[in-house]
Length: 414
Image 1 (cartoon, rainbow, N blue to C red):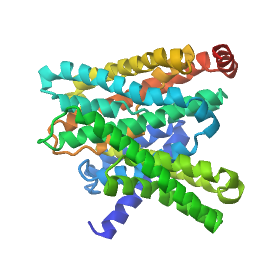
Image 2 (tube, rainbow, N blue to C red):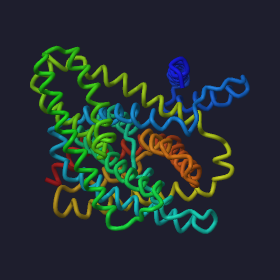
Image 3 (cartoon, rainbow, N blue to C red):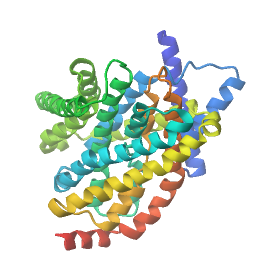
Image 4 (cartoon, one colour):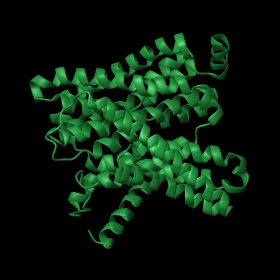
């Protein structure tokens, strides 16, 4: 593809993002839903106008994986408050590792036994779909939490759990996908060891790159240069981890963001004065772009031909999330730090599937015989999350997460 075609696609997608922002403003819709509508409308109009953008489900893997994903993960990690993250780190890590594996196992078992007979859905397909659906997106929930002036502790728990949950789910997805695309390998005990090496290797590499970036920023001592270095850090930490060291690019990005922020926090006024505004608009643009792409590749055939798969995936994802949150709290409440009951309800129902799930399903190779079934499932669950969970979570937050309620619960638990 020549540079003119690439530039044309970039401008076309950017125009759709702007149209999504306009729809959001005029119709007072959530940005993700308005961008989805923009993408769907464009997908319907372009064939009628006999315009071919060249954008296909088969050729957007590198765009979503190497460009969009690092920005979304770095921005989320950068916004975490270190002191509150440290306070809730143990429950967060428990939910994002053991909880993610519980959710993945429950969803995979449900999908396999429900889909094997009518659709011939193999175990590897069920595991891939389950790993994708284990990734949660807290954007809508966190927005509601901040709007209702709830406890910063609850916001940190929701954001931190989702971020590390996404990272571990992405690692698991990558490991399972490597087995799915290599028919000579089999799922056995090497899965766990490969998961740990990929997870911890990305964590270590990202920490080293974050350290190097902080040193460079302190050496140059210029706000604009620090901004450039951090943007480059987001992309390079992912690329170097995935391309050269074959470890988790996502864990590398998370670690790089947290380490660099910790090392530069004492120079925030001097070096980081423009960082928040930069990452806010980047995250806004790329998050909108994800839902634009979903709208462009979604088809009504998914819902007419794969309605059963979607109907199975939605309750399976909810049940897996329920068991993960309440199961982990049995350990967290006894040995670490208990999560208040109302917060658990919010974590379960507010565990929406969104941008990260879309990124993963769009990165599936189309030569896998079951890729379209998985994509239909994930799109169905994401739509349910946006239309049903997203629209009702605020009522749950009002009931269980008011500032007084949160503070009283924490005081009682202490």
